[in-house]
Length: 223
Image (cartoon, rainbow, N blue to C red; front, side):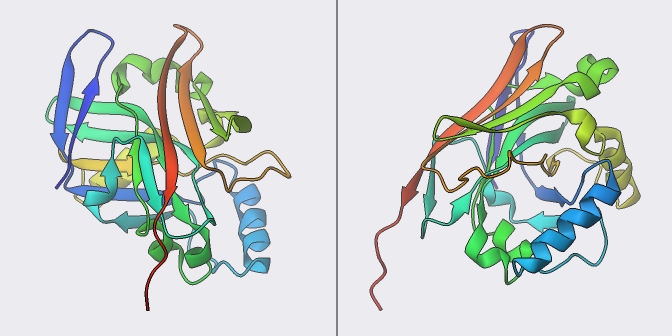
């Protein structure tokens, strides 16, 4: 299982082994907008979920703090998200980029989630330290240097919602990482980029947490 380390604002570092990795989907706070998005995706051939919001188990080894993501073709892309990391020292909040195989997505969202890593930031905040202003935290993504997502956590279901889900399922325990689902992209953008950067920001303090990586095409297969 991978081990992740997070630098906190107080100068300490928290390390945890990932035992369970979960990706939320269709997790907008306005579920009427989510239903419209599901219909749009269905027109593109992406199977509709049986229920929203959805939650997809992902292989824990796909949780990574890396500067490079390998890809088999040029139709993969990331998404700006936040992540909850449950540790023995409490719950942490960081930024994440859920890199996804869009070709595989039309055959099954869960499959596509397991075809590429979830890249997490190397910094984090204690959830309790920002709990009073979560909705004001910003979430942004750049693809090849172009801003393609720009919003706030108010657009997504809250961390508390997902913590309650984890408790109900007996998954509120150290080693569990849950990634939030994403905010809308700017219309008309090209998301199939070579470089990705995602950022979680706190307007109150000016502090940010970022994760950035380059997509590297794998060699062509033989056979």
